[in-house]
Length: 242
Image 1 (tube, rainbow, N blue to C red):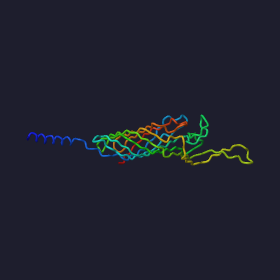
Image 2 (cartoon, helix red, strand yellow):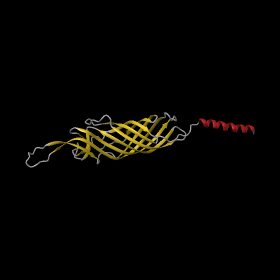
Image 3 (cartoon, rainbow, N blue to C red):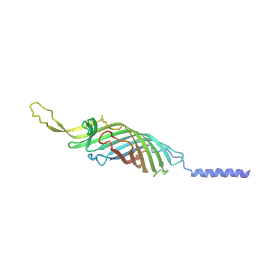
Image 4 (cartoon, rainbow, N blue to C red):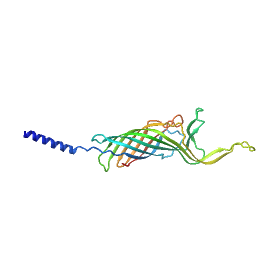
């Protein structure tokens, strides 16, 4: 009987000793992330020149769900991303779209000097991530991979520069078209030939609160125009606020 009692006590002590080495359950973290990035546009038509830095920003609010006592977790949430495309072509209504008489929005060359020309696209998104991170709270190593689906909630162009226009025919004047230049500021919100939905792959890696961010789209941005093959690969830095 004493041997049985000693055995039970011994097993109890061994169990407690093993539990002391068992990692504790991870606490949810990395729930609010702000990312600044630049888009590297691929398959750009030869006649379009882009600015080197195509700045953008994304904000994600995530629910982090640790998987048992492991270093892994799954996260999902809601996000917002804004992409800006700066080029020497205006994205506007083009009634003379090459290859037919269809009325489309497309990139057209800018005639004259300009100070600003951009296309801005804003998406509401649902990101899902599979996460790995170490337990060193001072210098946590992270490796996240995921996918996110988005919906285009707004898009607009903004142009500031010179715009040529022709004077109308007036009585008493020679019927020779007169072209003048005027300074304009134009912002257009009703755009077309842009996909409403998108989906893409995401990744984040690094130490501490600042990490590298990567996004690769699986769907196109434009359709039925000269830029339908263009797509942005995003590279940037993610700041984890909490």
